[in-house]
Length: 308
Image (cartoon, rainbow, N blue to C red; front, side, top):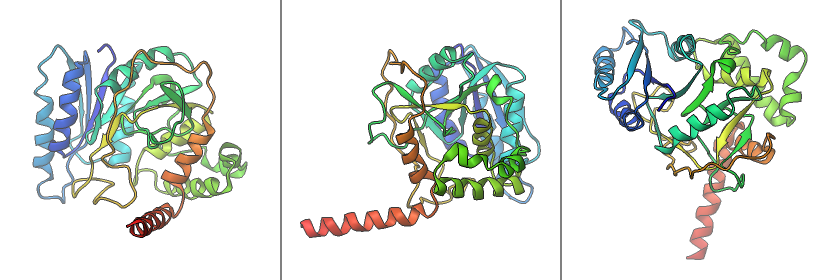
């Protein structure tokens, strides 16, 4: 591969090994590795961090490995954002994977081709691996355009990342001018994102980094590319997970992946798929969606008993 790959790691050697083996198959010429340091109050975390970093030492193909390892724990928000700032000080574009995101092998070619195609098109900010609605037909082409930038396996350019702001300094102006209403239209979506973004603004370094990325994309009026099939499976469940300590009743953990077909069938237009975005908003982000999902499961279970 000519496209650099960026791998973000921390303390999970088991999942990192799985991602590493897929990167090894892709054989990028450049591999950037971002690693956070152990927390001083976790007894075994230093050993886990070291074991995870040792996996990177097993690169056995022609590859320049460039590391950015922190000796101290910066936390997810600061470590990922500062790490990507560092990557884009070296390269114009990259494919990005975290240590619990297992991509389908076709994901790499999918990203590489689209990074080239849309390299200079500022309407597009990122390319995602995740499709949370493969059971619904969203497009006749290989991908569609969305306002949501899923980051479980993705790719982007320096030209897009330059707008990222961990601290969301534009947030107060967005509130004053009610810009979320113009972006999201739907009052329920506006209400959800108003609360979420305010929480992030109040504590930008304490939660995560990716909501700030979504915000940055919205501020530029840019779109993300979503594949018509799911190209990544997040296996980050368990005690070592930052965000998913257990199998939640409603999450998109461990969703199976499918192969992308080539040659890619490109849409002849750049228009947001509103129907798909409505589904994503209601399914992934909408408030109380877990209760809605439980009710659907209950009804489906009751119906199955009646059939018997």
